[in-house]
Length: 113
Image 1 (cartoon, rainbow, N blue to C red):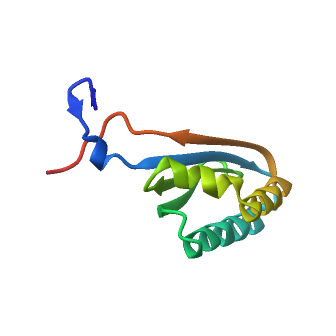
Image 2: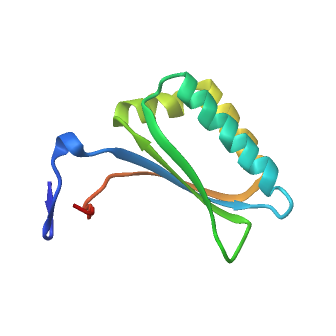
Image 3: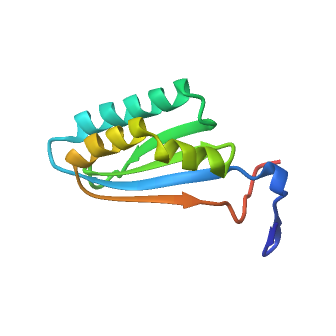
């Protein structure tokens, strides 16, 4: 795949999911614990998850962004269809005022050589 001046080979392309989480005040710790349980369960079930990170905004402790790296899109779909995933998302929604979940693909990568 070529976008602008950067080139990416399909075989090197990872797949990503991301979510923006606006957490209710006072629920931040419970939210992170529940998200961590979701990720640990996901790893045990071998859904093709490569890496997961939860980020918290420096200026607003109620706002989080998660970024997950996957081996393929089919695994993401299977994960999201599972009853256990839906249970965890329901639990996470209890801590949140708003959630935006996305599936993303890389269009450029710049790495140190």
